[in-house]
Picture (cartoon, rainbow, N blue to C red):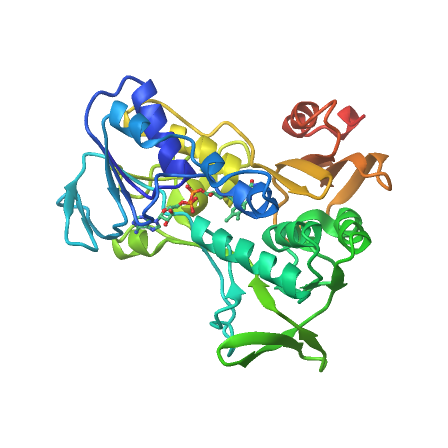
Length: 395
Ligand SMILES: Cc1cc2nc3c(=O)[nH]c(=O)nc-3n(C[C@H](O)[C@H](O)[C@H](O)COP(=O)(O)OP(=O)(O)OC[C@H]3O[C@@H](n4cnc5c(N)ncnc54)[C@H](O)[C@@H]3O)c2cc1C
């Protein structure tokens, strides 16, 4: 069994292979130098200083040794020879497989603008990025210089939260009328807008970024098409991520937005599987293809792929789920809102006090639900309602 990609999906697949008593060889090929780790902490506790770098790593070196996992770290798979059942890495190593799991994750999208490559312009995907942003926040706080965040999505808002809590002046430039608008809709998006503005974030919506000014290779300001100039000691680009599908595409596998798989995570080649951010799965509960870039999806699809690789009848039987933590707001969301749908949103609880539940209803069916800070009840009752699809069950 060969796993390409040392993220959460790959790591969970390895765990599952061994817990299913698979006794044969496992090789992990990972282009980062690190053992597999989990990313959510990087934009939250790690930047806040409340959680250590070690907390991101689920298993230490000994665990991989104990589980007889051959680790090929710091080496990227560059080609898959499907007829020959082997992969080749950048260093020229060849690794044979009976079954192959591709779990290559995503990479941040960048802006095609002059200045986007300046040394104090950052994206956030890995621990090195988090270290750089952590150091930048320290420097900005000491110098009293502002941070400009391009993009009011999850990562941008989480970095804004951390930077504000470390006394850095923050401007968020968001292209739409509200942050998170396409995911949450206007009412719930407003909750996040208010959360940040109350904490002192300057939130600029409808912002069309036109340039990044630099001086001696360092960004000094971000400009927008309406002629505004936002002073910047550091710039974060948080405009989303793109799945790393080129290895699969070059190998001739079926790829659309992601690597196409059936409900067992099997690609168009029966010996090759895909999990986590890159998988575009024919979802049996949703009756459509979905690609999901969230922690729980990687956590849960890795094991399904592993069981399918072992020839078991494993299939996706869970809904997409995600969470965020910003300041004192914690949120969990479950379900799937089809892109472009015009849902009715049913809000229950204390929205102004930021302890509430929300349900998205499309064509009379509950398709998604979330709670904000409702930790007494949590996500489980919401999950039951979403699975039932029945709006009458909302309470
Ligand atoms: C900062 C941050 C915060 C996040 N916070 C949340 C959150 O709060 N809630 C939530 O639900 N989700 C969150 N996510 C999303 C979640 O972390 C991802 O969905 C998850 O990491 C996906 O796991 P994965 O295993 O598919 O891919 P990844 O974690 O991206 O791992 C893929 C690995 O494969 C490696 N790789 C790529 N190509 C090759 C190759 N050719 N050969 C070898 N190795 C290769 C990559 O370098 C990488 O190490 C966050 C993501 C980030 C970056």
